[in-house]
Length: 370
Ligand code: NAD
Image 1 (cartoon, rainbow, N blue to C red):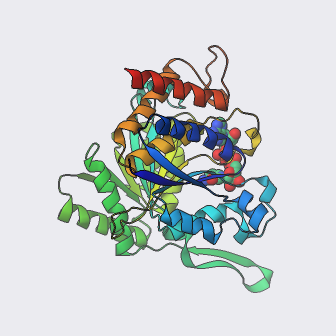
Image 2 (image 1 turned 120 degrees about the vertical axis):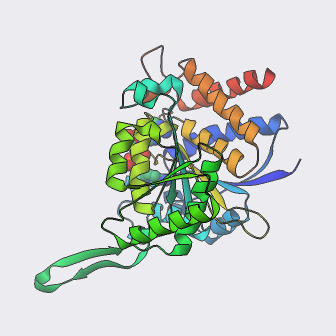
Image 3 (image 1 turned 180 degrees about the vertical axis):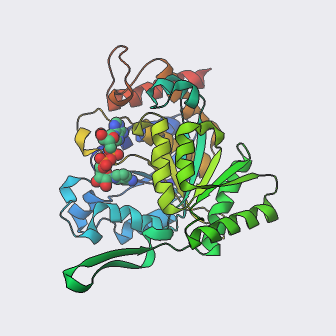
């Protein structure tokens, strides 16, 4: 069996706790002879800063670029708030995404049947919800130049950033959205602010042109971001794939996350461009941060990390069947009311992080045996 080289970067606070549970699942697949993983581990974020004085070392960048995929935990926390801005843990993740050229961020917002009551919306609005948000990740206002804070007259200051998108940047992210839609519900909603921003006008034109030239079977709709945020809470099931830029995607994907009930349930994938040898750089991580408020207590929900592993199996390692096994095991655990505290509904007692990992493994055993 060909082994898959995976770089595991647990990160800070709850990162290593939830990563331990994903590693148990990887061990289970290896011990069953279903997938063979070659695992390298590294430090990133605050833990890397503490050891090496930087949140991301060259060695980790090289390992990431050589790997078949990176499985990432979460980084950051109050411990590093006084650190110089450029050496903050969060910079480690931003720089890693840039070094790997990860321009596409995929965030599914799926409501599991057993958790329909955990959503902040009425059950009938979210029952069966399955949206994929495709966010451009390394362009737009978070990276545009010029940027900064400068002094103006009378000791006053001004802060400024630049939103810009090129045809190339728009087309490559739109392709990802169309290709995904072709495997789902054949619908893309492209979100911009073309009524007031020129970058949005170009975005809209290029997204339409690409659809007309290469994806005529995909239904395309354009929506302003303010309307999209309203529609997401009014009638979220109208969406299949939402395509948007870096800033709007950051906000809309957190909004969509809340439709599903808990941050502890949400995985994500970040993908780059296919290289000549056919490899697509990729990084998989839970949507949540390092949750310092609950770290070290064995209460964090490891499902987002384990579902990130499932996304990795599906999108990078061509193991769709094994990815489905994980999804089914999670469904089964939830349907039996085995819950961590964040999704607990008062039946029995909540389980801890490691107990949740063990419960998922035991369901994998049961499903695999049938
Ligand atoms: P957070 O996502 O860490 O936590 C928000 C809330 O959700 C907290 O109440 C937390 O306890 C809860 N939560 C998060 N993950 C959970 C889990 N797996 N199970 C149960 N509950 C969970 O966001 P925050 O508190 O704003 O940020 C904390 C740190 O994480 C900050 O330093 C921030 O910069 C960093 N951060 C990192 C990433 C990343 O690594 N990609 C993403 C977001 C925030």
